[in-house]
Image 1 (cartoon, rainbow, N blue to C red):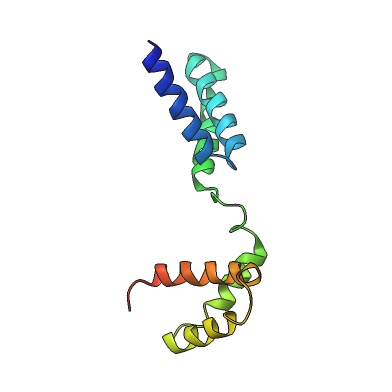
Image 2 (cartoon, rainbow, N blue to C red):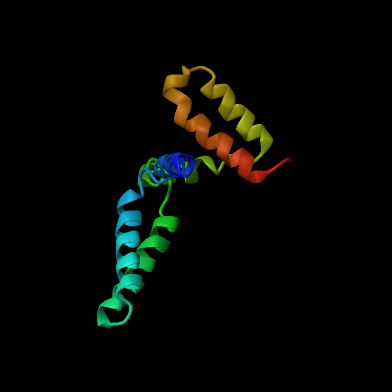
Length: 120
């Protein structure tokens, strides 16, 4: 019994860390889904449908709110212009002139784009 409770607590802690920014959608979805299952015999059981929609929207919500910002998306589009290896090398040479605290976000976006492009 104790081991099962401990494993459940560890699982909930990990789930909470994974769903840090989406916890409101997950909570609303879980409450409405459980209420819909418990009260499924009547018309109140229809609350299960919005509950499942909340759960699906929590899965589709971006995990990192910083990457969802319009400024970040615009910056990603602008950096996508540098597509050839020579252009990226020139851009990285320019970024090397400045400290990482200033260019960290740009370097992160470039690294993600390079990983998404795959080996060349």
